[in-house]
Structure formats: structure tokens, C-alpha cells
Image (cartoon, rainbow, N blue to C red; front, side, top):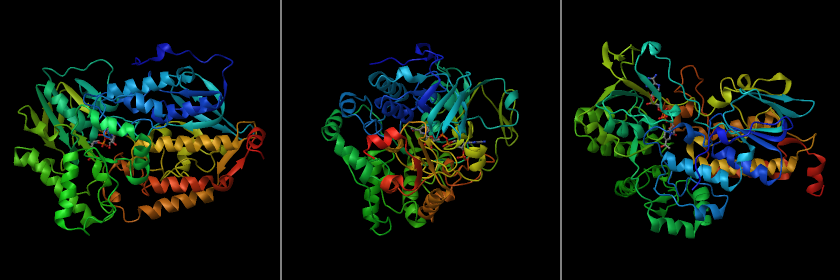
Length: 563
Ligand code: N01
């Protein structure tokens, strides 16, 4: 198994390496697969990664308990059958260290390292209309040209500690789950606070509680959380999936709605019934079967769970009752039971002993729903005038999702258009891949595609292949240029709006809506039409020589395709 590399193994750009066919920004799963595809074409490519290692979200989110919430057999590259046959996961849901081993193994296997520049944060990208290429600038002083720029910056990569009053006064240790130190953090003998109760908190709290003397959790909105039922990977299941991997992947893509096809180790196509069109007995049996399976397979349960409040209520109530049963103290249980927003309107959490942790004598839950954190002091956290003195505070407070990482790069397109200005109010991107006025610039896992609601691997592999084909068609010569015009972009935005009409997602203040970040405009950031519909629309976008795009093909591309 390969080791996890660091920036020491990298060579800085040499002077003769300032011109590229493609620059990729971001070394997570999506960016690395894009790099592989471009390398296969024998092109000049450079991938810039801000971290001192690859892995994107898995490089940064190394808090205790961090693990994927999609089954390992499904959360892995599908593009290379030898890879998926040879790699063996140890757990049903891989933990962060194993995911890092996997991604480093892939970089070794596909010889990606020579074209990766670590510890290099891209700060600006400017389009030059006369040369039809991009100048990409990093914080390390690199300034390179590339025909194409591909932003694979991740949709959950921009995390900051909220601006709590008195934050600077606090004298203890502070940790942000999404920027966890590489050195081991030991909470033994400490009083610890965790602020936030989303997926990162749900995963880390049980581990912190085991170490700390005392843990106090500050909860604003209780999440809906389902037991993951993690454990060693069932080797029979592994064998079965491997024996039919191409078909398993097809089922994931085409039959599951979002990529979660396994229920109790069986490939289980998404249920196309309404939750209220079936008998209560049948409905409860479905919910119970998924509860026993564990994890996020409720996303492939009844089709109208996110469009019909009555249907949604049936599942929400089922999960609330299950939640109550996991907590000994009824008062604490009632605080933990999620209310006031539809289930799945915020991303479900998959946990291991999350609720049971509140049965421990050393864990205290403080609801800050009606009384927000007033301030931090030198000693700790103040709520309702009471100070909770702690040695460490863990901020599990989430991300400026989907657009956050892109917005931190100064992207300037045609006519000096600034991408942040263009996206004021809400991001706009045709198929989530290109924005009008920004030729030769692509987004991977960006806004206006369905990243938020599908298994991210499925989406990013699909988008990489789409971009790869598009680049092949347009070519890499000096003239080559591909751009979306405002009209097809507006049509896509209208379609995105149409399919989201009536969605219950609008009813929660989630990162799906940008509503978790103070001052961020409230707007639906993702496409809700499902993966299969997205793929259909993307295929249509390729029809008739990308007729919805304005394309100038370079001579070599025209020749290669015979005219
Ligand atoms: O972030 P979150 P996350 N004062 O936004 C609270 C993926 N992920 O990092 O809900 C007090 O969900 C906030 O409260 P509220 C997954 O897609 C996956 O946990 O806004 N509290 C909330 O409780 C997930 O959805 C895994 O009222 C404040 C919490 O902080 C996404 O990442 C693991 C606050 C933030 O929860 C984000 O998850 C981890 C304030 N000022 C993450 N500001 C896997 O399992 C925020 N909060 C693979």
C-alpha cells in the first residue's frame, strides 16, 4: 500500500513549464481523475492543490471519527475496472486514513505526481480574450498560462470559524473540524466544548466524549441522524459486488436516484411510489428495513419524500421515534429530536453511537436554539449569562458550501467580468459546468449540478468524462475556444428552477440553500432533477457538435474527427 505523500516529494515548476494545455485547481477525487484523463491525452497539464497532500476534503477533515457516509464499495472510482477489482476496503464505510491511502494509491497507480503542485493555493485566474487562454496565479508566485482552466475546488472545502463575539479572548485550544491538525489531538483530562451538530459533529462527538473528562455540546438545530451500522466490510458482499461491478455501477447511476443502491447488501432500485399511496404497514416495513440496513439509503426510499410534506412527515416521525429510543433521559431526548424542518431538507447524518453518547455521565447538551451563544470569554462559552469553562473548543460549524471555494479565487472572464459579481444573488452555470462570459473555464462539482444530493463520486466521474470529451472536440490549438451563451445558461437555470418547484429543501436553513452562512444570499445551489435526468441533459448538451455552446474548434481537433 502506498504511503501518504507530502509537498517534500514535489518539484517546483521549472522556468520552461509556464504554459499548459490545462490547469486544474484542486486535488480531491474530481481533480485527480480529471488530471488522469488529461494525462492520458498526452497534454501539458498542471494540478494545483492548496494542501500539502492530495485528497481534498479527506486531507483536511481528519477529525476523530471522520469517515465517508456512502458505502466504500460505492464511494470509489469506477473508471478503471482493474483498480476496483484489486482494491480492498476494510470497513463498510471507509475512515479518513483509509480514504487517504486509497487516493494516494490512485495517484501512484496512474502516475499523477509529476503534474501535481502541492501547497499552492490558486488566488486568481484571468481570461485573455486575444490569446483565448487563462493566466492562473498562485500564492506561491506561480503565474502560468493554460488554454483551459478547470476548477475542482470542492463543494465542502471552505470552512471558517463563525465570528463569535470574544473569539479572540478565548485562551484555550481551538479546533475547526475541517482544518484538523495533522498531529494527534488528545483531549484526555480536558473539559471540551463542541459547537455545532451537523455531520462533522455527529461523527466526532462520540470519540471526543470517550477521551475528555467533560464534554458540552452546543446545539442550535438537532440533525436527523441514522445509525451507519459500520463494521468490517462483509467479504461475501465484497465478492458479490466485484463479480458484477460494472452492473453495480450502472444500477447506482441509473436506478438509485443518488447513488445509494445497496440496502441490506442487496442492490435495491429507488422506490418510485409515493409514501402516502401505500398502506402504513407497507411504509413502516420499508422504513424499518432501511433502518436495519443503516446509513443514507432513505434517499432512495419513496419518491415524494422531498416534495410532499405529508409523505415527509411519515418518515420524519419514524426517525424521531427511533431517536427517542436511543436516549435514556426523556428531556435530553426531546432536545435531540429534530423538529421544525423536513427530514432530508438538511443532509442526513450517518452515525455510530451519536445519541448513545448523551447517555454518558460526562456529556452535557446545551440547546442554543432560543438563546444563541452570547460570547466567548478567556475561559469558555457564555449562553444565557452562564459561562461554560472549557480547555478546548471544537468548532463543527460547517462550510461556505458549493460556491465558497470558487468565490475565494479572483476569477475574471471576458470584458473584465468578475465571477463573484456575475454570481451575485445566485450562481449561474450551464449544466453546472460553464458560465456565460467565462470561455474555456469549467467547474467540477460546482453549483447548478446535483452535487449536494448524489454520491459525489458518481457526479464527478460523469462530469470529468463530459469535460474530457468536450475538450477533445474543441481541441487545444491557439484558436480553440468553448463558451456558453447567456440563453442556454438561462434555459438551464429555468429548468433547475422548474424541477425544484415545491421542493421541501426550501424549508430548511441548510448549506444546500447557502442559508448557513450569515450574509450569503439564500438560493438553491444544486440541481434537484436527479442524476439520471442530469446525465440526459448533459448528453443533449453534447448533441450536434455541442450546438448549445459557441465553439471554435482548433485545426487539429477538426482534422482528428475527419472534418
Ligand atoms: O456542517 P453543517 P458539517 N452558532 O453545516 C452549527 C458533509 N459531511 O461540517 O444547523 C451555533 O451540517 C449548525 O447549526 P444550524 C455532509 O454533506 C459529510 O457538519 O445551522 N451553531 C450546524 O449544527 C454535511 O452535510 C460527512 O442551526 C452554529 C453545524 O454548526 C456537510 O459536509 C462528515 C453556528 C454545522 O453543520 C456539512 O457538515 C462531515 C453558530 N454561529 C461532513 N454556525 C460524512 O459523513 C453553524 N452552527 C462523509
